[in-house]
Length: 286
Length: 336
Image 1: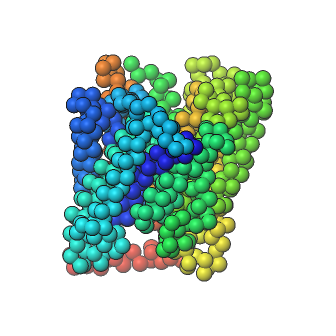
Image 2: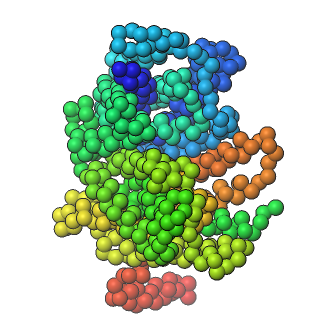
Image 3: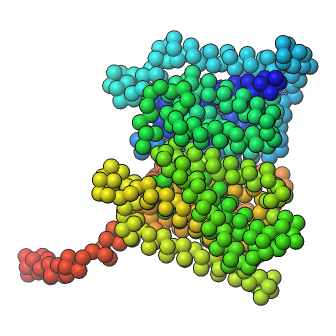
């Protein structure tokens, strides 16, 4: 049963990361390959700043800095090439991934980093052996995703974001401030990436190489959920995390990523519109 | 000091990348199949070549074939793998194809890591058979290897050019630009795309994989990560998507520039900064080229405009000289 708990933890981390990725995919309309690098950047910043300013301040600063960097990148790198379409944006994002990766090597070196934080002793709750730290991480995920849900559903800017996501041209004609929406989305996506990166780093470790692995899982979860709605993405991320960790009961743990990508490919072939999306996805239907 | 052997090795690596970038150009730029899994295919090619050629009593037992047979076998195996991947993946379009190939490449790499009894796992394979190695001295061999790699690059260029100028290549580009129209013209698009993908696999195994393994001291799975795919893509985009010489120019420029950075000697406290220079250069070049010259240094329209002029019908070619003499005469008269 502990595998279920680990799966839930992996899944909630993945849900936080993928909801940021999906937000960008829906409003800016491209696959943000550098998202994984931003996750690693957030985690490494939090480790480094946590050592000097103490952990809570360090984490808050790391999330803020990553968010600011994301906004700056969106303004300076992505906005000028937006009119050239998704492929140019995608490869600009690949370029950005390399630049962020290089910056992380230059700043932090290539060593594995861990947080100096104890999750506490595990104690049995029901069928699980839960450490207090793990409950905190789950709560953080719930709060973050709940916050995102409220932002999108209950605020003016959230309504604008949804309008741009469903029809960019119409939203622009109806007077939605496109630039403000785009800035907000970059800020939120950057912050979500940093939080997800920090969650992963607290559970295990982080290095400058981690970003390339993160983005694969995020892509898998995004496609599985169908990037169209945030709830679908969250459900898919949880399913992916749980299945990955439960599969280690049946087969060798080394096959964990293969299981994830096997599911991804299977879903793409059977339901290209995603497990939880009920709209047909035009671009997927040949 | 910069040693000449080191420059030769960099040039060899650059030509291996040029080969791979051309194949990427064939499938992505002309075929419209945006593939993020080419590193996986190159990995399959390199591993099958080394496993087919290394001797049966090595640390990781191989089949002990001679190198030409090894290359041929690697080509066939990689083509089969590409066909197997392509058959489901090509049913998807655009970014979903891209994600699927990305995932497949990662699966292939994970399998290489896990099945260490066959592939050597993360320790890698170290007994790599190189053609003509015993006939030359250790000092002379890098030049021979460079020559062989350039020869293979030329062969790949000829094959890609042949495809580009054939009606097969024209159909491929037609299917990319307007799929319903191409289907209405009676082109069997699925067969067309699958055969192109398998051809790319064949050449990855036949040429790129073995040539790459010759310059690597040991074959380890980390070489064939998404890093390799993105580096090749960066070279292709910089050189120009869809142009015949673009991928070669781009890959040579990118590899040359980024490897020469490593030659700069730096004190130890800047070692991290130095290690960061390579990815930083790739990233900045990619962003800058996309921003200010999105078609790359050489363009597809340039390539095919030249080809059209060369292959234009004889009567139109004859019509031009007839009309030209009149132009200078008219221009001349007012001044006279």
